Image (tube, rainbow, N blue to C red; front, side):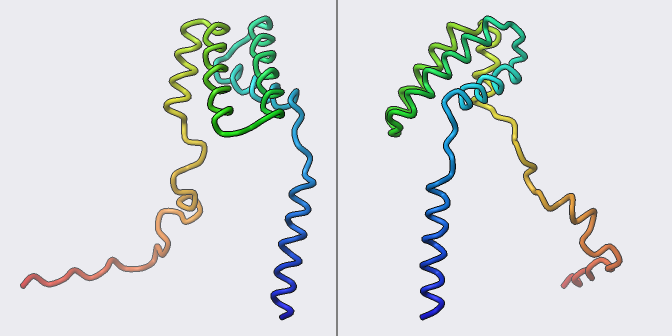
Length: 132
C-alpha cells in the first residue's frame, strides 16, 4: 500500500513540476529558429535576417493561439512559401535539401567509442568448428 501511495504521489509531483515549467516567449522561439536557419545557410545580410525573424515571430504568435496538428502543418506550408520569397534560389535549395536530408545529430552507435576496439582484448579467438 505504501508503494502505491508513493508511486501516485511521485507522479502527481512530477505532473505539477512539468505544468509549471516556463514556456518560451514567441520572441525567443523566433530568434532561435532564425539563428538556426542563418547559421545553416550562412546568411550575413541583416535585411534578410530581419525578414526571416519577422516571419518566424508571426508564426510563433499564431502557434500560441492554437496549436492543433492541422494548423501546425498549414503554418509550416505557409512559412515555407514565405521563406521562398525571402531567400535566394540557391539558399532555398540548400534549405530544402537540408530539410529533406538532415545530417545525423548523434552517432549511430553511441557506445562504440566507449568500448574501444574490442570489449575483451586479451581473449583468444573462438575455436573454429571442424568440417564434417
